[in-house]
Image 1: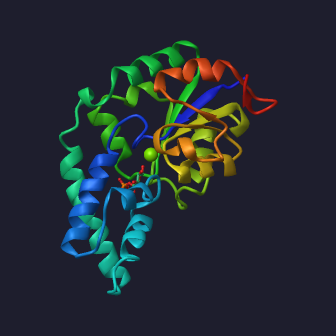
Image 2: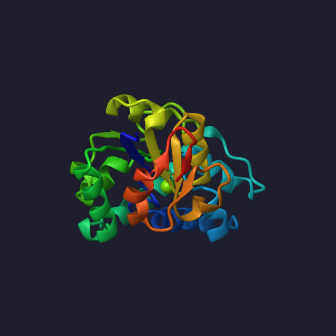
Length: 221
Ligand code: BG6
Ligand code: MG
């Protein structure tokens, strides 16, 4: 039986992915580096510095580590100004109802996010009380696709990976979940990821999909 669910935050429970895009776009424009929504999709789930490295591949200028750190800080300042306006209304009712249903079923719920801003967002949106454990980008040495964030969350929840489902919108997150031995549920952009064990077309399908998931065959029944 699946005993716990570990959720990615950005792009799964809140639409902060559009704020990440706006903040990176502003920085890329200032640096005269081409950047569009398609480039942004490749940044899903990966760390701030890994995202910058991706963007700089399209630059013919080289940057020192110190400059790169300054650039990530600049992006984060823009991003923080955007998320500062978030409220509980930024969480869809479907997400809240689903979390409520899972809690009532006795499942342990956790967050596994690469973001160093995850706790701030959980507070702004009043999502924090739903979770028994939160592991964010400040608590890990290796970002997704490394499984560290989910392994830490499972430890805090007191479950083994193969009794826990991970819900992810990023191919890097699905890869991290599978590398850690978790059951990987894909939403949004990750739906096309060949690695996922099941696909959620609607967030509210989660309770029924969890009940119908057969751990032995690793498939939906
Ligand atoms: C992930 C996002 O959740 O967090 C990425 O999908 C982001 O786009 C990463 O780069 C790190 O976020 P932050 O808030 O620490 O810059
Ligand atoms: Mg995400």
